Length: 352
Image (cartoon, rainbow, N blue to C red; front, side):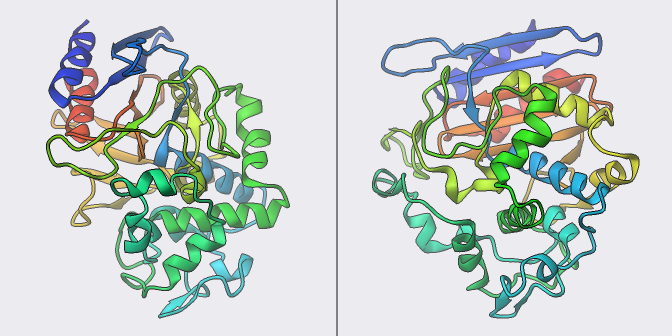
């Protein structure tokens, strides 16, 4: 299969430790491929059952939970942030009274991206990563960082990728349900759908089996050190990017989501109502919905899904709009032209 040849080439050309991929076809059959290694010391190969950190693919789960609450009449997407988290978003020109839940999920709130804060970025860069990898943040801490800066635009007037909105969405879920975000996810999604490999870790560990996660800690010069980032505290990403999953779980989840089986029609329509990302420095030829995005390929095909990056791990999970043909892949390194590698996978599977 040409996809296997591509996996082999990506490992060599990009210089990453390893890659795994699973395709679910329209007839329900699956294909799995792997290249490279799970462990640079032992040379152990990567395997299909591995758990890995999924970064911003977490946002799709956060969005679905929020939309389910909307379907139950427990919130409205037009509610302001202040309705549920009074006083949380204020100061330096920020005003939670004029930002809606929909804008949080659509990346149109205008809030500053807390993870771009220079002090936070410094703790993730170079040798400082080793010193700060177990730093723990409360969601409130992350929002405080964000609102210490003025908004980047007025709510609803532009689009810009923003983890802050999804931290606030997770906090709203907890406020409404009275449960932790992790527990609400388990009750609403993981257990009913049989997603046994998908969870929000409560500490720095990943359940076995897993590949080692490797990072250059945001350094890119030739010969820079590679660190083992398998263990880290994911609280700085939380409901915006802290979850762990597997190939099979992601293919199943997105297949059901785009197949219309997780949300009522009204909320499904909201999920798939998109905003252009053009001019925002994000992925080209894309539009963003509520926790999912769509990309128009050169052959005119539209693919839907999400992806994510977190220290040591990059994940892609995309497929056709009906959810019947889906590809999920994971790279256990975070350097090199990884977006280019994903683009090659997408073109090979959906572009011809």
